Length: 255
Image (cartoon, rainbow, N blue to C red; front, side):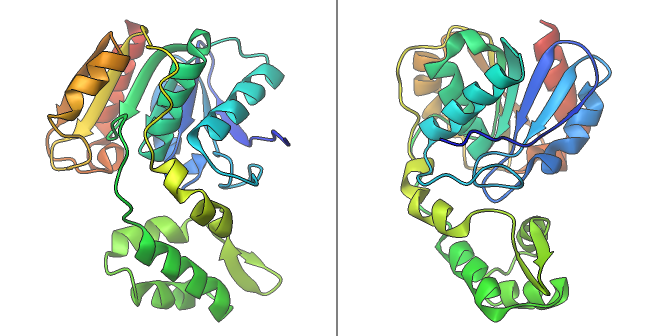
């Protein structure tokens, strides 16, 4: 397997890995990196099938985690703190469960270690329509997306991953690969063993991704975990409440 992972690194100190969500890229978490780089060496990673990282034949949480393991080895990183949001949080949990010695302290942002129902059908349809339309401007791509995605915030997030190639715009992420692997990516992590490292589950108080019934399984597999809800925040809690989010992360990593 080609294990090339693209990372943007800044700061000095203990290593911190930042893992973004589905359809995103490492630069989405750059604001968190800037907030932490005074105390830590921060690596904003593009997950496989995203950004400038390798595209895999088969997407899954375990494959993504394994790609990060190999990148850490190639980078000379023996262990790190890890922050993951949404899909990145699932990959972070898989990394901790399958390769516990590599993970010091863990922060999982607005996602639980459970399977989620499919909810991105319209997004995949819209992404493919942009490709088929051969859009020659971001505005044209936004107009195509708007036919299936009403929320301008979601469209703006997706458009961050749009790049110009040979006169038309295309996605930096692997649309077909993500579609093929979607069931695996929305599945629960593989529970190889419990993770006994200090774990913080951060949830947006206005989000329904993490519910009360999820706390039992969180405690079962992440034995030294606790959960904090951020008021005034939805699923994109690091965007809705950036100062509170980064404050929680810093305090958790300082121990």
